[in-house]
Length: 97
Image 1 (spheres, rainbow, N blue to C red):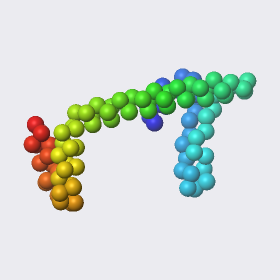
Image 2: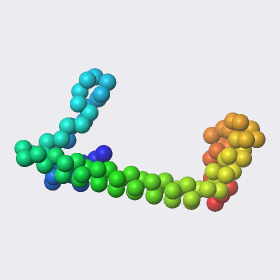
Image 3: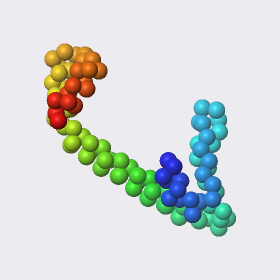
């Protein structure tokens, strides 16, 4: 969320996050404007959230593609043994190099 905050810093004066378990506000935005420009700010936030989600999705796909042989080996080993140790899991990465 720090990245989103930095990207919105010039457009939103204050972003407050609170714990929903203790009754505080989860998200509070203060745009410093009283002219009802909330939809504009909401649109900017939506765009920023979409950009972050898209970036994370692309990164996840890249990691999965890069380590696909390890994932396949791990799945086969788990089907065979049901449980594997940390050492067995780490060995899958060494074997793929």
